[in-house]
Amino acid sequence: MSSHNLEKGSLDGAPETSSTDDNIAPIQHADQQSTWSWETDEANPLNWPAGKKAWQVGMAASNAFVASLGTSIITASHDQIMSEFSVTSTQAILPLSLYVFALGLGPVVGGPLSETVGRYPVFALFTPIAGLFTLGAAQTSSFVALCILRFLAGFFFAPCLAISAGLLNETYKKEQRGLPSALFILTPFLGPGLAPAIGGFVCNRKGWRWAMYTMLFFTAFAMLITLVFGRETFPPVLKRRLAKKRGIPLTEVQRQEDDKPVMKRMHEFMTVALIRPVHMLFTEPIVSLMCLYVACEFATLFSFFAAVPFVYQGTYKFGVENTGLVFLSVVIGCILGTVTIIVCEVALYRPKVAQLPPGTTYPEWRLYPAMIGSIGPPVGLFWFAWTARADISWASPTVAIIVFSWGNICIFISTMQYMVDTYHGSVVASASSANSLARYGFAGAFPLFTIQSKFTIHPIRVTIYLSLYLVYTNLGIGWATSIFAFIALALMPVPWVFFKFGKQIRAKSQYETATF
Image (tube, rainbow, N blue to C red; front, side, top):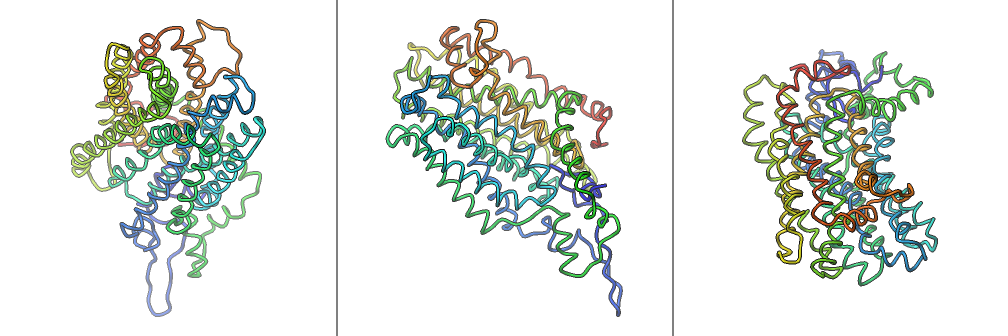
């Protein structure tokens, strides 16, 4: 029995600290008896000052922003890479696509590892390693090395995207978690929106290598925040430290955990990291449908990295730098979506929670933003599809991207919070890994589905930009974008169904879920 399963409820395997402590025995003094309580101890992250908690959110957000920035910061360097390395257009996409795939694989290792050594070491170690691989990518003269280094950079940047949810769960109580989690999740969406704008200017004026150096500047900033303000938040690790520092005897259960054989630890690691996420992805309706919904919308967001250059450079004759600025519409939509999340939190969620006993809440109440935002993707995509033409101002499809992005982030944040409140224990880590696998896997491979019926292609062409370019070239802007709009329309009922029947679906789960 692992130590993080000794207490109730967690996110990414992080214990919900509202339960009684089972790991450290009471302190017995000679002159009086006093009982030590983790719930009231100042070392408990839930009892930290607001400022210290905010810095942990800042650490997680800065690392997540850097990870997401790398997805599209070299968008504008496609022709430069082709020319410098004498590769085809298809091959020139690989450095980006491999990075995206790596973001889906990294959390599979980083998430469970953080439940062994703690959250902070993963932040403090993995991000610098990713920075070194990014530096290598900036200086390499080999295209093969560039692809490998970009993949490794994405792999080591990725864990912060998975374990940050656990950090938030350990730092804020369930009823207080909505606002900080919404602000945190905003940052991985700001990266893909800001990166093309930054990369458009940097690559156009200084070359693609400086896009990598720009990544290093942001990496150094994230490392600075991590080293200066970052703290460990994983309760089992903190309790062990307190036991050692204060001379508190460990219970027999925890001694058994510390003495557990390496092979048994490896088996548990593989279960949480690989076996269970895949199993949940195919057997748990909540995980399957939510991951499918989020993955399709996330992949559609990435499809705009191909659609925007095609539309604005081809139809509206924008330059590289102006095309990059169009992606700021994604940022605006994400900010508006975050505001929507906060309004729903304050006006709908918290008043309902206040009517229930402390520590009790219905997970389905987290779905209000997703239900509201579900109209955004189909409306925005159909709007973009049939207004992106020369006789209509470029402003119209740009506003459509805002509408899509607004709905997209509402869906993403809301459904993630729903899964977090639904599952308990280390199962949440597996659900989060399943979400990452589906999300970034679709982001890299999703375009294949839209061209499979019309083209016979080599597997290497399963890349974001080239595949979408072929779609838009052969189907036209209207019908190519409408494919994604119809998918969004078909998935629109998902949050509504779970809001209505979520309790019954949870009751049939083979994993530990909320029972109220």
